[in-house]
Length: 162
Image 1 (cartoon, helix red, strand yellow):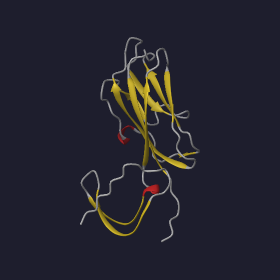
Image 2: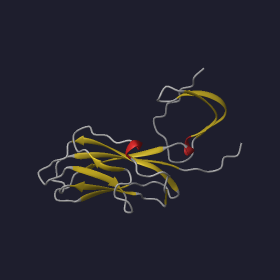
Image 3: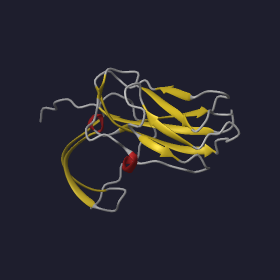
């Protein structure tokens, strides 16, 4: 039997579904047996939409992830095509330390999406909270046209006694 669990709201606190074997089907269709499910150790994501600012060379989105979070990645989707009148050709997705950490020369057309295939990191950085994502314009500046949906994927690990 496959168990389906649906949540309308997941709090940032640990949600412990408890002990006992469960068969769960993942999004890729694969079936796995879990012995304990705790949502506090699964990936959490936050989504923010950010409009392009005219004349800006970069846009910053700051997330409110808890201190001690492991940053699994940042993905984006262009929900309104970015304008090119100021010479914009592509964008980089990173943070204050590394400009292309989460994506390099990403397209700017409607519905462009990124995934972990775009990441330039081989480990999950530890963050002290309030993670700032920087989207940098390549070829020119943003012209005020367009919107980007930005998602931060993170997790928090802690010991769970049986």
